Length: 429
Ligand SMILES: *Cc1c(COP(=O)(O)O)cnc(C)c1O
Image (cartoon, rainbow, N blue to C red; front, side, top):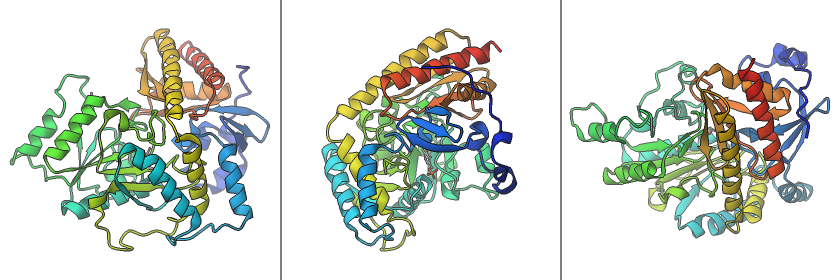
């Protein structure tokens, strides 16, 4: 393993066409100014042959690593056999097999009697479908979201997202959503749900009766804020008692990121609606699902539509991912073990520096910096040492690690060594 610091790259090293043609809205290529060419497993290689250990995994879209051979084989066979690629929502053999595998191996063993909707192929599409359905079912318009939540960039999803910079991009008022404090928002000072329950029951509170609550079990973009199991259980109870639908946005924390297939399994709760995207195709191909209780399926045919709801190559790899990784609890157990391994090392790194703390669940782990500006500098120092890591949180104060769940212990150790060096170099700079 080498921790050599590479000659630092800057945005000026990218081909001219990025600055002259691509919009200023581009972002990741600024922090990682290399032209990537190929990737395998946990590693990405750029055009000059430099290799990077990927501790970001497409923001959680590559839980099974890059170009996973077990998924690539059936995908290549499917394409070579002229398997249908685009199909709107026409029935195809690839879709039949996906629905059967998902029902038999994911839903049924967990006792989840959900209908499956294919919204457009992104997380935001899935969230929009969830919000629309909740409003249609209840006839109410207001949605409760949480502080520091992230649910996507379309207007409905933005309305339940916390980040003020992203919200400002909407250009119009974002309405019909009310934020409530997420778990531990007051550092344990205020009793859980005290405020929420009070305003729900007070006819003078000014809160419209909500259609639904939308929540992440771990807030990935919001800074790796972890909701306690008992907080999630209390939230479910509160929703049931007051006839409010519970939506769990599992776009980033689902598909095994925290251990079990669904991140809410540990809490033993059953959401009314669930959103999935990022790693559901298993291969980084665009795909999303919205799942909901059978009795909530009040859609009229075609009432929520989309051109790319039938991306069959994604169905092929999604089916194979289920067959390869979700036949037993082995994959979950391995993820939990690797997550504990990561956490132990992160606690060590945190203990060596003032103002640094470890946080996360499963294989969504990271370091929070009290001096918020350090987190971005640490990510930059990690990039110079050959690792891809990103910040999250309202002030970009958290270094968030999302390595592929398939990463080996050696790879995890290498990445954590790089992080440790990057922190030391940054803090002592
Ligand atoms: C990434 C993400 C989304 C949005 O997904 P897109 O595919 O970017 O639209 C929604 N919710 C959560 C929790 C996410 O992490």
